[in-house]
Image (cartoon, rainbow, N blue to C red; front, side, top):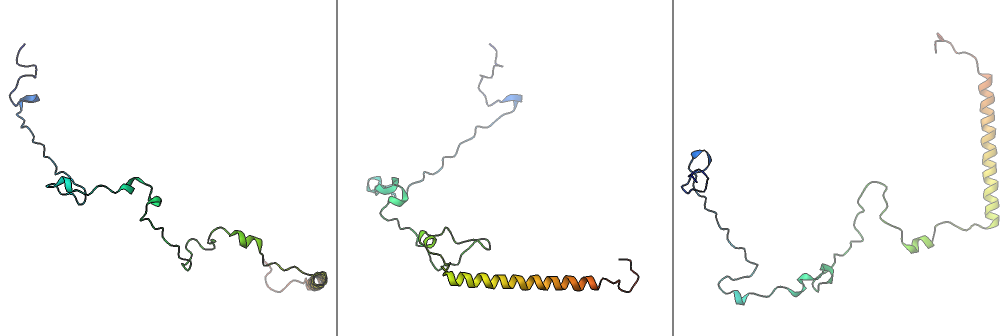
Amino acid sequence: AGGEGGSGGGGEARGGRLRKKRRSRRSKPRYPKGFDPENPQKTPPPDPERWLPKRERSNYRPRKKDKNRIARGPQGSTSGAARVDDRATTNVKELSEEEKARNRAKAEAEARAEAAAAAASAASSKRSNKKKGGKGKW
């Protein structure tokens, strides 16, 4: 049992270099708010509601929603889900049978007028199918 086992004292490390022992610094203890280290008995007890969920505490007040706040988000997005009352009422009018018949007749008349105009323009385009002047490449 020689002196090479590493168990021998002296400040030697591997390689024969001397190593100084490091002193570890002790950090200051952190005390809770309102704690007096000189009088630890006079420390106020922790809040008994501390362990309750936030919404169940006596001093909790939820934030009020501002109804007049400008809607945020992408363009065209709705401000949220529709209310149940809104679904029940719609802005669609109930038309009487006379009004329905009148609207149908008006729509048919417009359709006939459009068809007549389309037929007239088709006939006029057939007549003027002559080539225009120019080089005629296109």
